[in-house]
Image 1 (cartoon, one colour):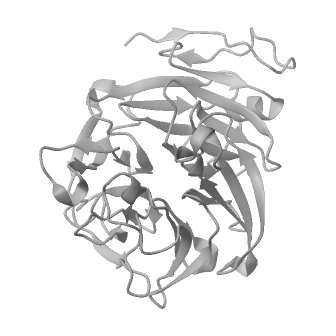
Image 2 (image 1 turned 30 degrees about the vertical axis):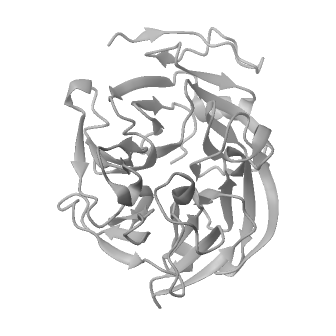
Length: 353
């Protein structure tokens, strides 16, 4: 694949176009949009966006966990011949190997077992292991599942929690670990499983939960959402961000496409001071992460949107077709999940993750 150099017009006049020299493998599909100097400081003068893998099915949809040179991702819904328990659909969990390599031919997609983790979705690092949400099916419980040894034995998983007061979760979507709160595991539970014919009708409201590994107890920490989706803590674990993608089911886009922020009270478990942080510039805010400078990143209909800690949009990585989720990796690397396409961004600005 040929890599060409392109110059992107800057919204900020403080950096001349001749100084900003990104490397773009497919400039018609992915490019930078700089709104303020803050974003210029984040991406640097010589960042790059490279298409590193293309698949036939939408394998690159959720999770985006980087570990030991590999990226762990879950697919979007894929049609299968006959599976009444999921409405003839499946979701594949994959390990993409050698994602940091300069030799793109060495990058490979390795399917993993989802025998226990029915219809996996979001995931995150949990110590040396991985924790994934399982949406479940019409015959199998959803919840949280841990892969204790993702490098040596990625097909072995154990359940953390699969019900709430005897009721099944709706379709757990995304997950984050609060290291300041004893490693508690927080997750969202929208009702997309029912809407997409993966699950039966919801038995619970659409809520955000906290699982305490010390007590094996689960509690509701936030409600009042149309469809709670992505969630992420800031670096100090003092703020929790939650995306609401209720506009996906509302007529004329009247529902929320909103990121909410909460104060994490004394580390947890209580949240306070709920407020609107930002609204997606296009489409819906799905996966969300916070870098060590407090900038908030989210996958949206236009690609990746980035806000500063004050909730001001400072720039975007424009990706054709939009972005559901993405993953941070060392040395300023961001992996962008674009359904059938996997992109690798290399930043040359501030050290962010």
